[in-house]
Image (tube, rainbow, N blue to C red):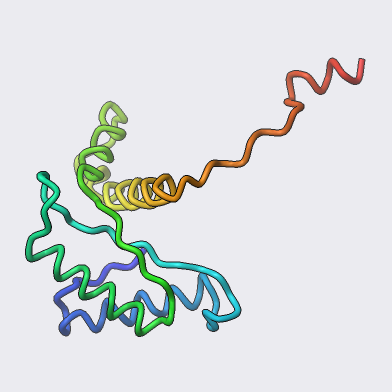
Length: 137
């Protein structure tokens, strides 16, 4: 997890932290090693983009130039609400939920991005554990 405020040092500290993680996770050479970066875009509930969305788009552009990677923005509306809903009834304390909220919201942003590409999960194999034992009998 990267825990750097976007405003710290004009965003340079966050930019460098993400660039380091991109190299660790995706490799050093974007021409030879595939991988993209997805950034949540804070769109207003009516679908318009305010000052924060413009700042995120600007940051995403800087990130793309810094890493040499494609940087995609994905609407993040209601992802924190979804994260809260998923944790409701979990028995976690407010502090525990707060620590997990960002990770769950990030997972929802990535899921929504992949769904927007029409990427389908791999189909399960034809045999399942329930049928394998019968086939062998």
